[in-house]
Length: 426
Image (cartoon, rainbow, N blue to C red; front, side):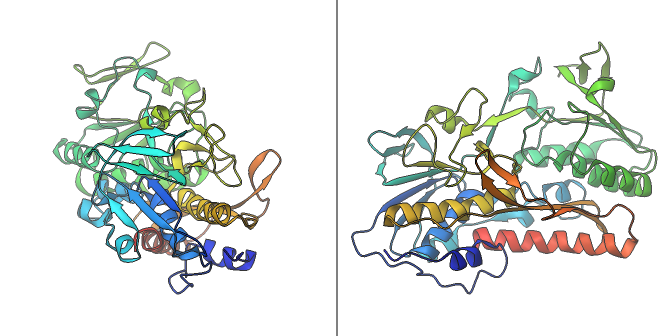
């Protein structure tokens, strides 16, 4: 294989403007290596696409149970009535198949990292030279007494977009005017750190226009949260008196849920009853990561943060929400960026060529209303301690700006969603 340059790698790393990039930067001189990718979300789908861009001769198989991937980004827009339904945030895999990726809608039941094999629920066994795992998250049900997957059918988390989102949306629509919505975010680390607060914002937008006597109570397991000053400024401007945030120190940390009574109980002996409760569980890597022996005591997957190769199993790479990626948050954009870096690492390893020095990016937009957006962005690099945010490379939206600025940020948020889903799934 011919080495590809850092300049080529950086050009392809960006999430925008990649559609016209060359599809055969490296040519394979021997038989096709086999790469199996498990998980078709932002991480796995992006990685499959970019392996084919970097080397169209590699045999790539993408395994994903769902025929259409429902994104967590913009699922809050469905809850807030900004989008009609789940079809607006659902994406298929036709483009992957068209570029030569073998897409299998199946589930991995076993990984044999010694023999380089994966077994599928459908009965097939696949050999691999490199395995890439992007399995997403699972929930620590035992972190809150009385919580379980069964309870979540009644008290939804909606932190895996799809059916859970629809349950929560129906409950909000069925609630009487004057009702109380409780949102209980988990402790760090968890998927999409600003997500619960965007959710509160867009639910408040729905309530303001349809059930204006209602209130939102946020019972938080943390004493601070992502973009907190910007969110609170937006709440005061758009929803004065509607949203109350309670920190962990002031009684927000939930220890027990009583599904029959519809109540949450904190660590200070207080109870809270809501007409709609959105209890978001504490989180860990998905079950496959545990079954494959890829996790450590933290419940997440330690990786070489330069290549995302597992520190536990050779030739297995873990990216996205399930991995430990230094200072990078667990987000769709982070997974997209990691997918490109992993693609470069795998192609370089298979070709026995030096890997370009990686650079990682993350941008997160949040909507407080349809015309009020805020954002945070950063560029990340690698040092001896791991991935770190480059000082001065990004930052959050300015606090005191006019309505036109916030409206532009809201437009950028919609443009960002269109761009990143196109990059991963088109």
